[in-house]
Length: 222
Image (cartoon, rainbow, N blue to C red):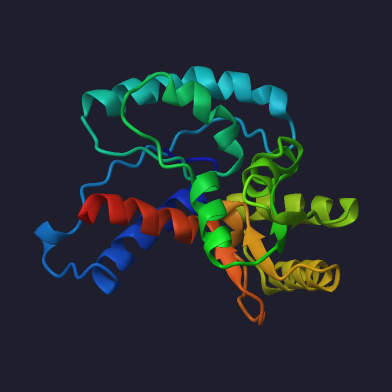
C-alpha cells in the first residue's frame, strides 16, 4: 500500500523489480513476483497525527481488496503510516511485513549501540523506532528541532517531485551532525529520503525502503 507519497511508492516498485534480478536471479518474465501496488491519494499526516483517522477509513477498504486478491504478504511503503499498522492488521489474516520491525532487526544485526534517525515529525513523536530499538538495547539520536523542520520540508518537496542536490546536501549535513552527537549509523526512517539521500557517509546507512523491499522478496522467493 503506497501513495504516501507516490514517489516513494514508485521507487519501491522499481527496487522490487531490480532486486528480483540482481539478488534473486530473476531473468525471464515469469520469474518476477506478482505485485499489487495501490497508490492511494490520501491527505498526509507527516506532522499532524490527527489526520491518520481519515486515512484509516480509506485504507481499510483497500485491505478488503487485497484480501480478496489472496496475496501472500502485505506492506506499507511509508514509515509514518505504520502508526495504523495494528488497526490495519486486525482487518486481515494476511501478515503485514512491518518496515519498523525489519529495520530494527537489521540495526540489531549490525551490533551498533547508537544510531541517528531521519524521519517525519509524526514518526518521531509516535516513537515508532524509539520503542522498536529500545527493545533491542539500541539508543536512538533524534535530530534537533530546526533539523526536523528542514527534513519535513525536504520530504514534502520529494513528494511533489522536486529533488535537488541542494536539499541532498542539507540532508548530508544533518547526518554529519547526528554522527558528531554519537550516532554510529544512520536510519533513513522515511521512504522519501531514499530518493534524495547521497550515500557518501563512512557510517552504516539503514535505508528503510531498501530493507523493506528485500524483506518482501525473501518472503516471495522462499
